[in-house]
Image (cartoon, rainbow, N blue to C red; front, side, top):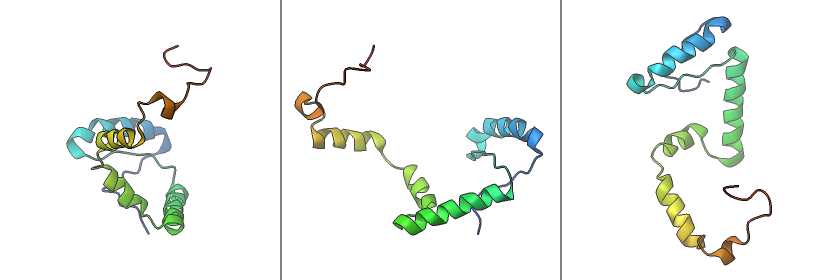
Length: 103
């Protein structure tokens, strides 16, 4: 089993941060976001975690990530506010004594 990586770049640990920085600068052109993994065991751990998540709730984490790219957060938040009447002080209650907003 493998993760759906577009590409793989293997570098020595001491070169990883420099490689990450170089590849981050290419993101606008490639659309690929680099990540650093420690080694084969780290990849196995990610794969196991993905499988456990899928088993527990039936959702595929990769599909959730893909769906999140087109999710309209502003619209969702606006609907939540309208549904729950969040601008009504009685609904929201009093602000806790500490910390206060803008203090």
